[in-house]
Image 1 (tube, rainbow, N blue to C red):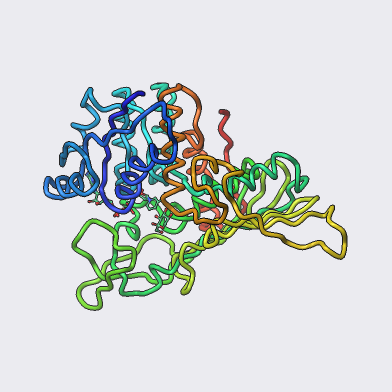
Image 2: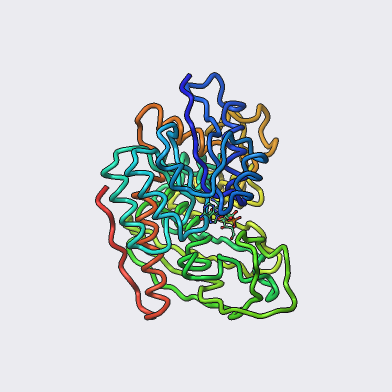
Length: 390
Ligand code: NAI
Ligand code: SOE
């Protein structure tokens, strides 16, 4: 069994999720060809780094991510920082020959994403962007139905990602509202997840038209770097400018000829992690709602006329990754399970030298789509998306 030393950069929300996944992988996937070892934790200060290392079970800690990238004992660099650090850390890690898993969005801009993609191509190591929702077993099952032709030719993909954590004007001006750190707002932060799922299920997106809107132009300034995701309201004190979008609505065309609509907002009261994907085909339809993660709704034209309608398939041992997960359907797939499957697939590729998707080419392609969406929102025109030759 190969031990793989991981250096984790960033110990916030995703630092927690990835650490949990490293512990969880051998519990689900056993016997295993590899064992992730939580080697070094990097955070913004020595205190934060030591605290995160204790909490998540890392052997060493540092406030300098460059020492992780340069450490010959480290095999994998895991980037779970705000978006402004993704490109610098990833490119340095790839040049040092490390395998890299990077949180989404791959970067703030297309230029950064391109540089990361090129560094990954040169380094010839395993690289992955952490679009974990496509690894929800019900989403992977949707892909299986589509690939098998069960719903025929895809006509339309309708997808949403709706949240409400930033709907309160007193939710602080975290890094997610600052273009210099985040790159964009709802587009890079959450629309990217449904762009990834739409590409996964229906292929390349070739052109877009979009509208964006910022509802809350100023927010109270916060002192800490970590994003509280709306959980700590600041009712008094100075405010700073929000220079990213709260919401985006976009129409898309796929290379296959299918059409679709994708939307995302962080200001929809009552919506939490409301990722929905509805795919209509010539022979049937598929519907997924992340808030009911164990379920895939399917409807087939071939059903008898008076019985046709959506029926529910509960994912379990017979479905993608089911044998490794829980022994009873509908027992409850959680966010952690999507991260455990993601980590498993990443390490499997590391030890076998095989391809894993979504990789940095996919991350770059999504960045090209994001850029076209933002451009269309400012010009009001349909905008073509350049398609990478993989
Ligand atoms: P967060 O704000 O909770 O945590 C970020 C952490 O990075 C903080 O603890 C901060 O101190 C640390 N950090 C800042 N500068 C650093 C430096 N120089 N060296 C080391 N650490 C540093 O942010 P969160 O939510 O964990 O987001 C991190 C990344 O993960 C972002 O790119 C975000 O878009 C992505 N994300 C992905 C999710 C998914 O479902 N795949 C969910 C949430 C976030
Ligand atoms: C905030 O919108 C956030 O944490 C995103 O950054 C994640 O990517 C998403 O999965 C959960 O919500």
